[in-house]
Structures are given as structure tokens and as C-alpha cells.
Length: 462
Image (cartoon, rainbow, N blue to C red; front, side, top):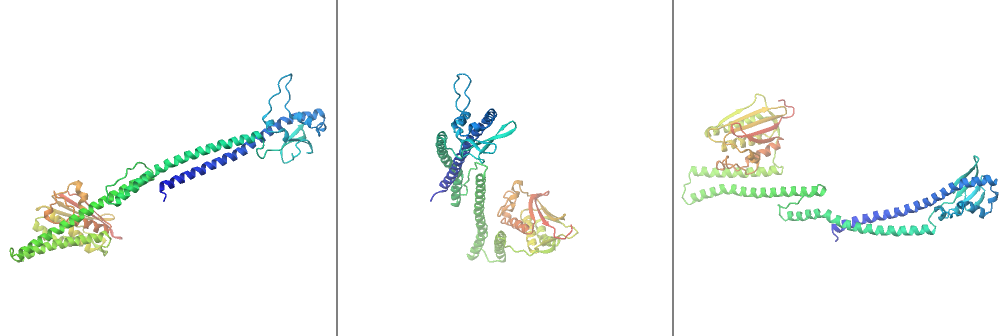
């Protein structure tokens, strides 16, 4: 089957042929009309030259009787006058070369023919013959309708041949230009098609050089963005699979080791051993639950039951639930809530999960002896809740990555202290479902500051 290069070549060539043919036909018609018009214009000029001569002849002879049926006298008037003396006869006018004399007729004032072409009439080209302010006769010229003279026909034939050569040359140039343009236009399309096949084969590093700013250049740029997105997605998928397998393997390895030790009698089955096994099972269950909820959130299947509630009460209850654990770790917990209600439209269970993850984040990573300050306030159209903890902090360039799955800052937030790096990712999904957002910045206490922005419930006043 013909390819797109051939089709584009044929399309451009066909358009060029049609344009050249239209120009040829237009030139031919223009020549026909223009040349015939030129011949008729020459005849009218000759009539204008004859008018004063015939007016003088009428006055001198006292009428037109001497010209009736006198062809010799009539044609004598039509010839150009011989110069005085013995000078050579002047060259014939252009009008004479086209047979103007045979196409002229003379009529009297009542439009009765006196001499000249018998087929001339009132519908032909006319010029009045004036004498002493009155019309004494009419000159009529039979116009050309088409080229009939030998010279005119020969000129027309030469012009047609010349136009044919020009047309053939134009078509040859059009074919050459069509071939070049087809290759130029389709080169980036072929490059995109080739790169698309490589991308479909799994080569996500494929890129196209953007060499123009037209639509093809935009298409190449869009392709590069798509390839970059697919490359990032593939890298995240691999990282995700590696992280999931690692996070699942760690508690499973501990469980297997503990169980094998009990089975072999190396370790007795005591309450302390059971508690250790339950801790590993709890960590494994939490990891699986977080992964499950994140997967539901990705496909929009994580359920929410939005109801009007006071954000203060949910936050206060969440803080009270972990206050003892903060005391055990030696971390000061300061929760400052406003006196007025913080009205939001939210899912109470998800808010508890959100605040629980943020409080757990501080418990895991904040150094003993540190502090956590929670500030809640209502603005004009939103509610802001800040979680600010003490050292260790997070480098500024790494703050945007805190919401990536399985991401942990090894140098500051110690991996050994627990957590799979899914809590903040899940918090971000919960905030998005509540039409809010969560951002990470440096805390004035030396650690991490997490800021939550909730939209104020409709009808609520700040």
C-alpha cells in the first residue's frame, strides 16, 4: 500500500498541476480577450482619426453623394495622406495591418449606409461625424470577436507553445518541490513513529529532538513529556515493588526466626515472646492496611462519609489518646486550640486516621526530650492546623519528597525507629479528599512543620 510520503507527494503535485492548469487557462483567456480588445482599440483610434477628415470632406463636397458606391474614393480617404514632395509613403498603421479599413462603414445622419462594410450596423462600434456643430454622419466599426488574421493567429499559436513550455517546466519544478516538501514534512513524523515503537517496546529513555516551533515541534515536545512521565512511572513502579517486598520481608523474617526458635526449643514460649510476635504481626498488618488504603485512594474507591463536625473535638481526642506515649518518650506535647468551634465537612474516622499518622510521625522520629506544638486557627475561608516538632529536621531540598510512598530521610529521620514511609502519603490523599492540602516546611522548633489547610464548612463563620 502507498505510504504517507507517496500520498503527500501526490497531493502536493496534484495541487500544483491544478494551479498550473488554472494559470494556463487563465493566461489563454486573458490573451484572447486582451488581444482582441487591443485590436478593437486600434480600430477605434482609427475611427477617431478619420472623423475630422470625413467632416472636412463633407464640407468641401457639400455632402456624401460623391462617396456613394464609389469604392475608389472611399478607400482613398481611408489611406494615410502622402507626404508633401517626393518623400516615401509612411509605413502602414497597426490598425491597417489588422484589416481595419475593411471593417469600417460610413452612414449619413439618418443612418443610411453610404460606403464601407455592408455588414456594419447600429450595434457595432460607432463614432459621430460632426460638421458645424451638427451630426452629419456616422462611422461604424465591425469589432473583432476572435483572432482571425494570419499574423494574429500565428502570434496566438506561438504564445500557446510558449505557455505550454512554461507549464511543463512549472510541473517539473512542482514535482521536485513536492518530493522535497514531502520528505521535509514527514521526516519528524517518521521520527515520532519510530520513537513511539521504541517506547512501546519498553525503551522509556527514548527522546525526540525538537527542531521547530510548529505543530510537529509541539507534537515532539508532547511525546518527550509522555516518555518522561512513563519513565518516571516505571521507575516508581520498580521502586514501589522493591520497597513493598523489603518492607514485607523484614517482619516476615523476624516472625519466621522467632517461630523457628520457639519450635527448636531455643526460645521458650513466654508472654514476652508472644508479645514480640504480636508486635511484628501488628507492624505487618499496618503496612498491609496502609497499602490497601493507598491503592483504594489511587482508584478513587476509598470511602468517606462527610458530616458537619467540630475539628477541635476530633483533634483534642486524637491528642489525648497518645498523650501517655509522648510522656513515656519524654516529648512535650502542647496543643493550642481556639475557643470557637472549627466547623468542617469531613469524615470523622479519616480525620482521626490523619491526626494519628501525624502524631505517630512525631513519636517515631523526634528525639527524646523534644517537643511537639499543635496550633489550630480559623481564617476567613479556611482552617489551618500546624504540627511543629523539634529536631531532627529535614533538609529543605528533600521536603517535597516526604509525601512519596516509602520515602524516608535516612540521615535525619532514622529508618530504624519504625514506619514504612506510607503515613504521610496517606495523609496527603486524605487531605485531597477533604478539598484541602498538606505542606511540609522547616519547623521553628528545629524539626518538621506540617501544615494542614481545610476549607471552612459552608455557612460557618470564622
